[in-house]
Every structure is written in structure tokens, then in C-alpha cells.
Length: 280
Image 1 (cartoon, rainbow, N blue to C red):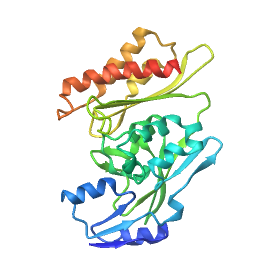
Image 2 (image 1 turned 90 degrees about the vertical axis):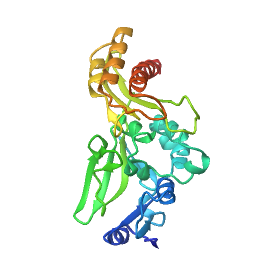
Image 3 (image 1 turned 90 degrees about the horizontal axis):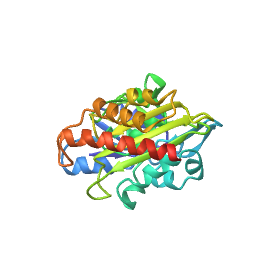
Image 4 (image 1 turned 60 degrees about the vertical axis):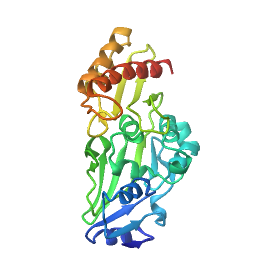
């Protein structure tokens, strides 16, 4: 197997033009897949020496830019992320263990497309966008359109996600809950991420609810969120939103629970996460 370490985006794209080639950020997922012979690429393109793919900064006063090779450890400790996007910092701190967090990247988290991971639902609820560069040019893809299915994304095999941009919303309330009845290091059985804004009267002006682990990819529970908008949430309304989120999920049976159990947990944890978000 050939391994290359380009120092520019252009060089990385040139390497990706070869057949059966994979780009590698932190390599935490790819290493496991290689070990289990689930993939057999001819060439790996390491991205850690491309300086323009790293860094966390303010793109504008209303947008945070996160380079694709930024690690979860960097997200955890970034003063900007902690101040502007605390839910993202918290979710990063819950992934795997310190060894994983020190090398796993935000770009890898979304490109890998595993519906059980923590960052995709959090970024979905925050309205994040992926910036993609390829032979045919550059484009911005909202994460609501980026995840296409199990380990499938809108980025082509010859393209790179170079950065993720996340809006900063004044007064936004956020909360992420991961239900892990087993080990805390494990994937969550259900993940629920919520971002909402309220007016001075406590009426919900805007809400986004995202779910992880209960479909072929992380999903937005748009109907559940719509139930909250324009209202001051009551216990009855929160219960209706939880039920709606459960009905919109499409979980499958596995070692973390049956389809019916996971659907019930979506209901329970959506209600709890909304309540926690409202409590501030």
C-alpha cells in the first residue's frame, strides 16, 4: 500500500485522483476497517501536513470556521468553541477515550458517516455546513443535505471536506444527550441534540432537533421541532414532540436494543433533552 503526505489541498486532490485511494484525517475509523479487512485501498493520503485544513477561528462575527483536520481534543479545549458552541465542545469530550479524541478529526467524523457517532447530530442541530473542494471546484453543502445514508455522504471519492462552518446564534440554547446504558466509551444507543432560541416571553422562535443512532444516518426531527415553534412549551407539547421524534425515527435491531426499545428511548430522551435545553 502506498502512503503519501501532501502539504497542500491541491496536492491532496491530485493524489485522490488515483483509483482506490482514501484520504486519512485522524485514521481512527479507517484503522479499524483496515484491521478487519473491510476496506483494501491501494493508496492512503494523509492530510495532517496540509496547514490550511487545520485551525479554529471566526469566519465572521456570526460564523465559526473549523478546519477539517481539527481534532476532538482541540474542539474540547478551544476557547472559541467553548464560548460560542458549548454543545459541540461537550459532545467532543464524550467520544471514545483520550487517545481517540487526540487524533480523531471533525472532518473524519462527518465523512465516515456512521449514524452512531456523536458529532453528526450535534452539527446538524447547529445548522453546520461542509465546504467541499474537488476537481470540478468548490461548494458548500449544509449537513442536512450532506448525510446520504450509512457511511455515505455528498463528498465524492475525489473530493475533500476542507472545513466545517457553524453559525453563531445570539441567545441560542443548546443541549446534547447521549444515552449509553453500557460503557460510557461506547457509541450511544440514542443521541439527541437540540438547538433553540426563545423570545422574551419564553416562546420558541426557532428549534432544530437532531437524532443519532436511530436511522441509517444522523437525522433532523423536523416535525418534532416544528411542534415547538411559536409556542411556550408545556409538558403536553414536550411530550408530543418526543412522540413525533420517535415516530420519525427508523431504528434497527442490534446489540444496543430492539427497534421498539430504541424508538421508546427516542421519545424519552427527546423529552428530557428539550426540558434540559429550556432549563438553560
